[in-house]
Image (tube, rainbow, N blue to C red; front, side, top):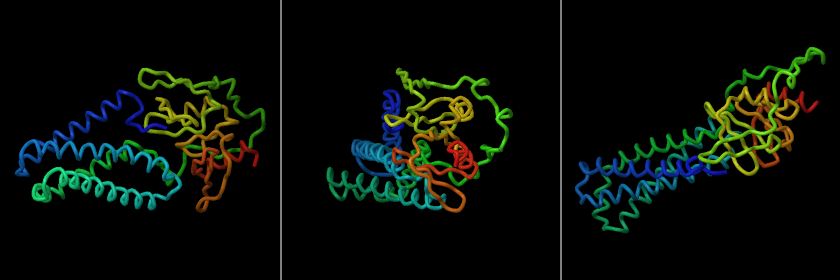
Length: 274
């Protein structure tokens, strides 16, 4: 799966332009704070911009494969704080280190007084990048959108197929390309603001649609809304185990883990006939 900033050419260009703009802005600000030649200040700005641009891409891998979805809110906060300290330390250390190697130690020391300002700016950039990813699930919130299954007669059950046309494929536009995702290929779907992320074994796609739409138009004997922000393909579940007190942890065949809310687990049990 690609990083959000590298999904298509347009996003790559915007990502580069944003860091160029940051480098120029930092250089302009430091001109009034540091007594160094202009070319050195601009070089320092671009060096720090390039380093953080690379760190921003690496942060994706840490969050994507760090299994944050199964952590409690407290555990996630501790991890994010530690990750922020590590990121800013690497950023500042690498930036000052490169400037130290390119020029002399005396010139590098001239940037020391602006270290707190840079650290604060680095923290803001880190928060913006983390907010952009948003891969962690809101697992600590009580799920109120999924009603618990109620025993009703076969005649009283709603005829989903008769009321709505079930999806066989989902068309997703990515830049100038259109991807066609077959429904059986979907591992799970996750809410992402006004969009829905569709996960397959090959890639991840972003669709401008609502979770309610997919809940109504996907086969209800195959796809279950186990959390108000997640719909899972039950055929992709390999293991279900207890997590905390009243929650269940679903392990998928791909190795991904998703927490099911109590109501979502009831709905899943009904589909699996447990």
